[in-house]
Image (cartoon, rainbow, N blue to C red; front, side, top):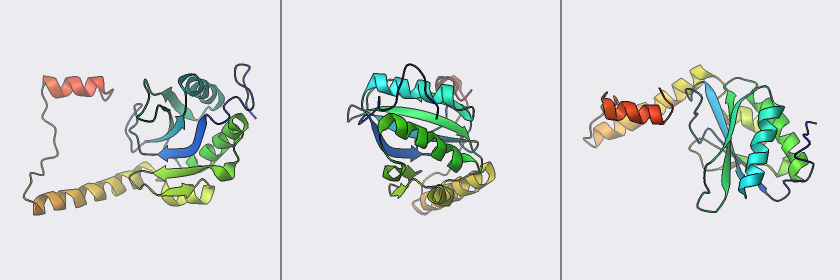
Length: 182
């Protein structure tokens, strides 16, 4: 069990919603094909910051953890955690959530997740994570490329332009820099 003096068992009780978004948000550390992003929803700003601090200090496999700068429409804050996209992700997520359960008072069996563009909630188990989460860069590229091909087919059938290249000019370059892509 990993604990720090500034956060104790039960400190986040009723503040962390026991549902994760996985690969719903884009990575700020690198390419999505290489990085898996999980997202917690936390009811208040200071507890969200505590959760970020807890995660960043407690797990050497976490590439980055960060809190949203503002509230969402429900007044909640998002905590984003980035992992290298590897077959170890299910165990890493389960281990982390078991520790978060000590802070929230939740049981692991109460946790669910939503994956990528699918809004269906799944129980947070190793088997369900392995079934739904893409665990390698190659598989991610194939899956996303397949979806892009389907989208381009629909665009073509609708008579829309399929040009996927973003024009390179000072405006688009400044957007990429602001987004942390360059």
